[in-house]
Length: 306
Image (cartoon, rainbow, N blue to C red; front, side):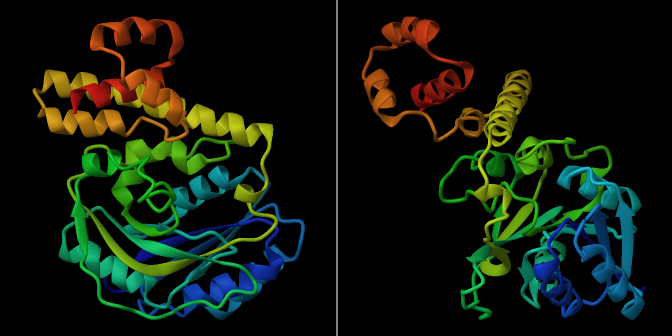
């Protein structure tokens, strides 16, 4: 292949009903310099056979059959074997706009960025998809600014999912997804954004996220809850490292405030927050020591610094 090759990694597990739509949307991309890696993660339906049939028709497609290890393991497998200079992740029940790769890649190249992302549209089997392209200004952020938006309702979830973006492969030189975890995206995004000079974003909805009964986000369980909680704790610990680094490097206070804000979960009880923030600073210090966990303390410190 000539030019920049972009590797698209697609974990496949028991999505026979939707898989062809997904693969077709990748093959129909206007940007053609693609390496398409279909990782069959031990599917027990006909998904593996569908992957093999597509590979016979297009030499850009590589199929890997492996024992079931979960989404993280499948993505890690794709990262290990991909040859492209850039990487994109697509869930096998979702669909791409034909311009998804082209628009994101052009935004990335023209702004000398390491990450390029877009907005998305949720849909169900009965939804009508909107394929319109409309003009919108490309927004440019630093990685630290994106860290400051990890819990901002305006930006969640498009800032904490893997699938609406293109990444330079160097980001995954050492980074891998945690095995056996749900919410695996949320375990790594603070590391992905940390220290990145340029991230570009377009509000155009170029990724179509399918909602159906088998989706992980639709099926709540104890593992779902505990893995989400563990991911938040990981972010808090990472936040402490960033704050220490900020003090050592004399980083501006505004940047420090945004960094602290990044590790606050909006699940914090609003009524309690209002009550606590009315207290004088010296009472607040005593109150915190008795009643609040690390995540809530970080947020309250952020509020005091405003």
